[in-house]
Length: 611
Image 1 (cartoon, helix red, strand yellow):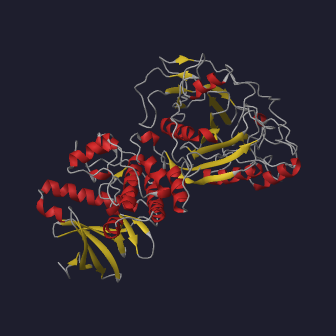
Image 2 (cartoon, rainbow, N blue to C red; image 1 turned 90 degrees about the vertical axis):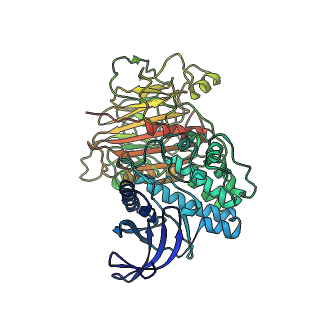
Image 3 (spheres, rainbow, N blue to C red; image 1 turned 60 degrees about the vertical axis):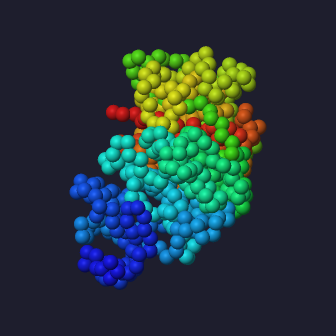
């Protein structure tokens, strides 16, 4: 085979790897005069014509999957072709070795180096998942360590592309059994968390020098994956918390990509990740219906408007924020070891459907609204302005600004003037999902309609009068926040605002780009005590361009009824009809492990208003 010219262009030089499906060659591109790697699927020589068609389809799917991902940590695919009756894939040549080779040659990888490798693989996976691609075969052999220090993820041969028809036969298990997530072994559909589980198993192998679940046979290995815990990590050091978290059997309790990235970054620096970070948004734009000051967005967005309002009030957070939402590229928060499960959030759907029961919508407590106008935001002395009434209106408007005045709250609202039901026990029951005397909005009585495995079975779908639906734990109460015009904001909380979800709907947004809107909004939060951005980045949500923003801060007793470290995350996107939606959750930092899981379930169960 050496010296063979493939497709009249690629001359094979030497074999640099092989496996059950074929081998990989170093080759020279005779047209562009560069070195490339070519994967030859030799298995096609020994199967029937129908099986050859399946192999070819998988090869093309692999090329499509890799081509959809634009990231430096993913091996580039240049071409896919047929030659001598079998498929070939032309790829970027990576000079180096695989992680599997490194473990075989050296025994183990040092924990901080393993964390660095894991970070790059995770970033590649985030890019893949954002592009709608599940890798489904993360293992040490598919992680390449380049001589120049780069880490690259390769082999999307069994990847699943969102929207593509599957080419896996019913009952067929694809992937290396050592690294199959428990839910995949059970036959459930894989999701991003399945790739993250495989990453955890890969990192375990790297630091311990052996696969966590490999047994003497494939069947006993799969049984171990489902039923047994991995042996105690002895050489993982600061990497132990994230590996342990990624290997949780229940995909709903694993860290998501943002959490895992934060934990891996700490481990790469030699620090052991904390179970939960004590951060959360603090006071900022004015009081909320929960009685605290919170950042907000108003109608006249943009730097000019912000400068005008800030100059007038002289207080941080009084500047306008755009009507868009902030989003972080993931749910980036650190949850090392702790994992509270909290109750799922019921969906807020649109108009009540037949067979649904309408629940009360009692307010959480006094909001202090003074009317639809006159809000100027918090003052320098810490006085409470009313964020629920409009945006800052004092001071000159930007010249030529014909924009309407709208208010959009972004930062966490922390405290309600009164806790419904009174007493810590009631609050804890509601936070954990127990049903109080009054439930929220309209609960859908059809429990069979569940959007995905991330939504806990105990959660209820809520059909909101504003036209959307979502899943939340039973017993969360609904309360509109601020004026309900082109910009509508609806809050749901189990305990008067200590923990809450906010949905913002803007039918006439000032920003066409959610990410730009969130950057604009973040400027308002700089005055928050201990404000810290966890993440703010572009993403794709429901096939639409979006952004996710997560941050922490310390709420002050003078501003809210629930002071202390807090954390919040918000996903913002613009629907096909031009409406901007922001989905936001805020909670005390100590409860973030639960809140983070609830946010994931909220995103899974969310349904925007349909025409």
